[in-house]
Amino acid sequence: MDDPLALLGKARAQALQGKEKAARSQWQMAEAILREKVAANALDHRRELAELLLESGDESDRAEAIALMQAEASHRR
Image 1 (tube, rainbow, N blue to C red):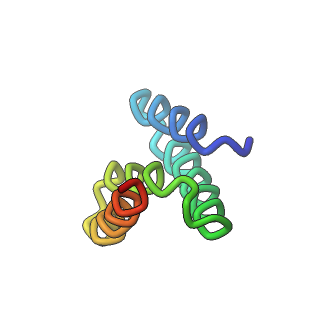
Image 2 (cartoon, rainbow, N blue to C red; image 1 turned 90 degrees about the horizontal axis):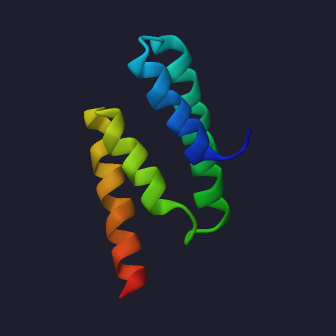
């Protein structure tokens, strides 16, 4: 599956079912795909990657998520 948003949805559902290991795996796949898409095209999927990073709750990802959203906001102006 190469749809990162679908993978993220599956990860959320698995987490709600208590399947943390499966959820983390789906989450990591979604993040990897989004990172590839952002690297290939700086205008592609920055917002989605930022949301995924913020939702992860990992403090170390917060600064990257903010930078991605600032870049996205600057592009849309």
